[in-house]
Structures are given as structure tokens and as C-alpha cells.
Image 1 (tube, one colour):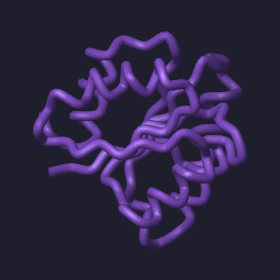
Image 2 (tube, rainbow, N blue to C red):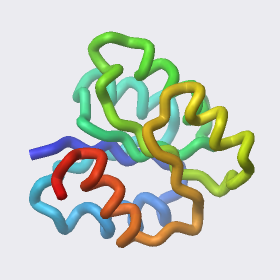
Image 3 (tube, rainbow, N blue to C red):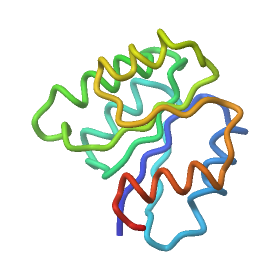
Image 4 (tube, rainbow, N blue to C red):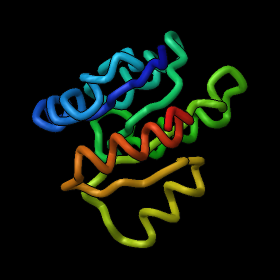
Length: 123
């Protein structure tokens, strides 16, 4: 079973993410509500993939992504940045800190599920 960490400070988005991915018995979902919690949980649980909001309290998603990608025990984790920030510069910054994919809000749960499966090589 693959571990997927959902990190977002909005309960509605977390609920939508859980609904999109939680009905698949190939995933075990973990939840963080701010960047600091996401970083701590990722280091402790070492998930296979993180769906990471950019705009979060305490530590933003870019900082979380960069920290995970620079640390040998967590650098293999696939990271999908999820954000309302759709500008090219935001996408480039996400790529620069090591994000594997970039999804803008509002998002299609079906499309997100497909991207997650692809990144986890689940088909």
C-alpha cells in the first residue's frame, strides 16, 4: 500500500482530496494542515507521494518541497504542488525546488487521481 500525505490548510480542499484518493485501497492517507506539520509527518512516515498546497501557515509548500527533496531519506518522495497560483513563475519556482507535478485549483478530482496513479506507477 502506498502512503500519500495530503497537506492543505483548508478543510474543504482536504475533504475533496480525501474523496478523490481515499476510495482507492492502494493508498493510505495521511493529513497535515500546515507546512510545519507536513514536513514533520513526511520525515516521520516517509510517504510515497505528497499533495502539497503552496500557501500554508508556518512553512509554505515551496519550503516543504525543497526540504524534502534535499534530504536523502525523503528525496525520493513524489511531490504534487496544488495551488491557486497559476502563473508561469509559480510553476517554475515549484520545478526549481523539486516538485514532480503542479496542479492548479480548482482541480478535477479525476485528473488528480490519474496524475497520482501515474507518479506512483499504479496505472
